[in-house]
Length: 222
Length: 222
Image (tube, rainbow over all chains, first blue to last red; front, side):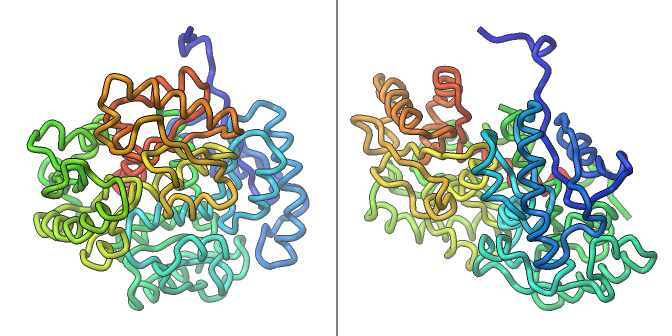
């Protein structure tokens, strides 16, 4: 027996942000992008006490237990699936072990989508090296990684010179042979730089937040 | 300057079938499923002289150069991207080397989507072992693989007892702990067994054809 859709509200996708903010609109940015593009209900929450997000090994290690704890809260509150909205896939395996719902990592989702779009994938992020989870999935389709000049933390992207620095780094990846770009920092979604890059460089640019939403949308479209 | 959509018809997704058929409707089955679900234009073609498709190492090796040749034809004819519509991802790397457009393998697409939907993925196919490409991507989320009783080739699925045998094998995977099923033969899409499995077993079932279409849809939705 199936229940009419109006009587069975869809359980939301829980979106875990790794950048702490007191601003509910800011926290919901990624969830809102997923809602707008895929029509999926989302609920967004951020981990505490990391106003600069995840930007090195230390900040990643510090975030991991908080991500697992927040995932458990969201699952207990009824989330149908969870997205860890960070391209480094922090705590992905630990979270999958801790909760009884599917967990999508934005980084591995982006790698899967990029492999479907291009032959040579360049990775643009806020660290010199591409996230290991992304690198491993791309295999020999990985070309190179680049970090915009002057950017070390996701919050640096919000500076006035952020978009120009991103464009310069992205152009370098294309010049070195990439025919597809993967944004390995979800802060690059926050600043909305993807349309600019696609227009100026003429290559598809994979946004990790939208890639994660795409994989989540499969369940809802069934 | 952007051109209005009506003046710029979208280039189709080329769908490569590995089961030879003289029936154009049959050849277009997968493409039609992608068109209906994602609204993407497709053009479908099948490789020659393999009326039983790919069902063992010998038939896979025989198919590989034909897949590469057909991919080149479709790319030359203007396909925007290609889908190799077989869960074994036959000739995926060779095809990527041979053409200048993105190439999506139905098997690795299904694995990516399954990882976004579930924790423990059971693989249902027409061979005793899961396709290596699928197995590698699933990593430690792979639980087990199963082959329906009496089924050795994709064409066996079309027999009257096909759906019941598929259901029995699928139920065995769920009993052994799988919370998500991956259909590792695109012929399982052809017989339309996915809704039956989801209804009877209560787990998400990933169709490799639709998973490939999902990844392709990202480019068009930009």
